[in-house]
Image (cartoon, helix red, strand yellow):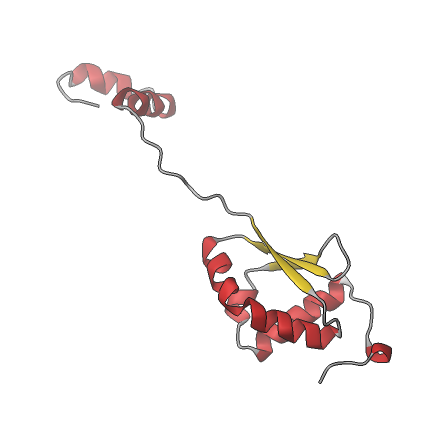
Length: 124
């Protein structure tokens, strides 16, 4: 049951984290929601969730509406919105030439130059 205006406490970071934990328990999403970092957004009525992994980002998208509805009911803010911030970096496939690979390996381990002298017929 939604709270009426007199029952609504101001949404603080502590209250938001408490509601987040309660919603996780109620919706049986403890494993998912513990991976997301929730905080108050820059604008009133906005919360932000930091997605550390692509797994969390993709899975949270499926449950976002349920989580947001439950949070709205708990805090008594029907206009509450949620923004997901992806903090992970997607790796793009980059092709390197054999010389670029060899030079990168050489930077990490200079002893490779000695192996190249021992085995000159191997393509690095």
